[in-house]
Length: 331
Image (cartoon, rainbow, N blue to C red; front, side):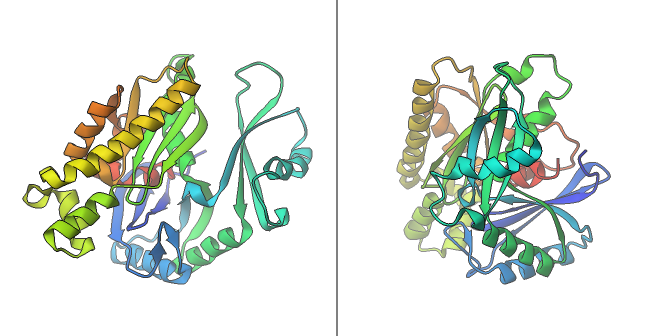
């Protein structure tokens, strides 16, 4: 059962987002720019400094809630859809690490393994799982970060889990069979763009493009002679109409073309998919010219992730777009 009072934390390359849930309602979203020297290429390089930063975010916003759920970047974990013969939980714990034998090159004992059981939609009598493997060192570092932030980590989950929680909440109570449709969710991040695919309502795969909306911020910085932080802020707020500058057309078109190629690849390999919509969130979701370029490139209905969010909240549309994964972690 979801906690009525907790924090959902999502740490991006440039911003940390903390969703504050109290009494079963997400009441606030705390957002702050991560200071230089703490993150590098979407990896935390100083967990102590990040812990101190999160503690200050909570302190200055007068938030005293301790229980927290952390969203971990998907590139920091191994994820697999696994089908296995029916077995006990103890047998599963023994066998699960072997499912990652071809993916983890170092000592398998250096990883923590977990799983979520999926419905047997094929009625084949097998055990269907989403299996996850994460470095013990990485988990320990996040726990140390939480300790410095004076919070208690109840769970650490990959980003796709935060998105999947929206789908579960939306589907709950809907007519039988609603779960069977396919979903695509587009994360328009700073250092990368990702598309999470859910087949018949269940997580299938995430396709990541090592190129994000930060490329547009960099172009603004170069063209306007601005510090990158100022350029990023101006781009998101559309200061002086910067989002419509002609020199950004190529950047937006390049990103949209990459998204289109990923979608074409997915459609080629999943010819019977039922995708009609693609839901978006992230910093790039605040740029209407960019969204329009995507609409022209991708033959699907482009929709805000707010249309998937059915949980009670008091956030604005912009806050939902920026803090979607943090919000998802509170469900």
